[in-house]
Image 1 (cartoon, rainbow, N blue to C red):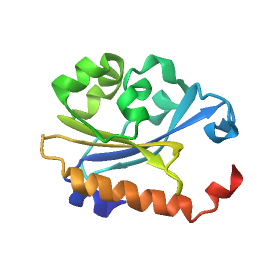
Image 2 (image 1 turned 90 degrees about the horizontal axis):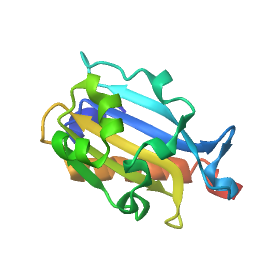
Image 3 (image 1 turned 120 degrees about the vertical axis):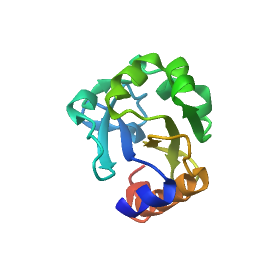
Length: 152
C-alpha cells in the first residue's frame, strides 16, 4: 500500500468497513456501524487513532450516508467543502491536517458495494484521482479474488 501513497499524491490512505456488531453488511441487514480497518500514513504523517473509529455509528457521518457515495461515485473534497459536507467527520480527521479527500465505495464483481469505503487524503489539493481510482480497482480485484463474493 505504501507505493499508492506516492502514486495518488496522498499522505494517508484508509479503509472503512460497515458492519452490524460482528456481522458484515452482506448479510442483508442494513448496516449501522463501521470500523476503520486499514490505515497507511506517509512517512512523518500522523496516524489516525483507530480507536476513534471502532464500532462507530454510521448515522453520525453525513458523507457515509450521502446519496452520491451510495451511487458509487468518487467524491473529492477540498478541506472547506469537506467541512461543509460532513462537519463531524472533518472534526474527527482534523488532527491529520489534510487539505483534500477522495472517497469511494469498493464494489464486487457484479458492481454491488462490498460494504467497504476507500478514503485517501493529502496535505495539499493535488490528489491524483486517476491513481485513487486505480487503487480502488486493485483493492476490488483483491477482494473479489479472495472468495468474499461467494459468501452472499
